[in-house]
Length: 84
Image (tube, rainbow, N blue to C red; front, side, top):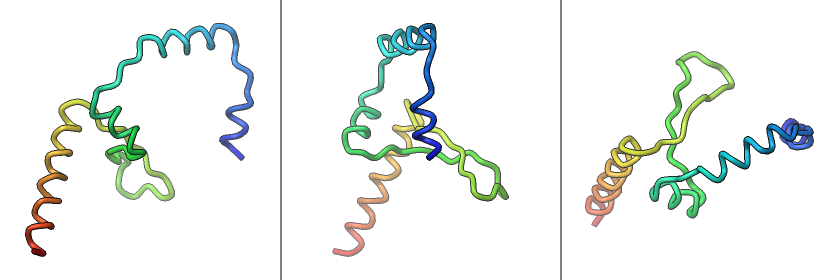
C-alpha cells in the first residue's frame, strides 16, 4: 500500500525536470550494471545493533564493491575445491 501511494503522488514540473536532468547525467559502473542485469545487488547493512524491524544500508560501488566481489570469489573457490 505504501509504495502505491508514493507512486501516485503528483510531482511538480520543477521536480520532474530535476529528475530528468539527473537521469541524463547518470553513469553506473560496469560492475553495478552487471548486478542489475542479474537482478542481484551487493549491499552493506549500516544500521546500528539493536534496531528492531529496520535494516538501513547502501549499495556497494567502486573499490568497496571490487573488494567484496573478490572476497566472494575466493569463498566460492574454496567451497568448490573443498568438496571435490
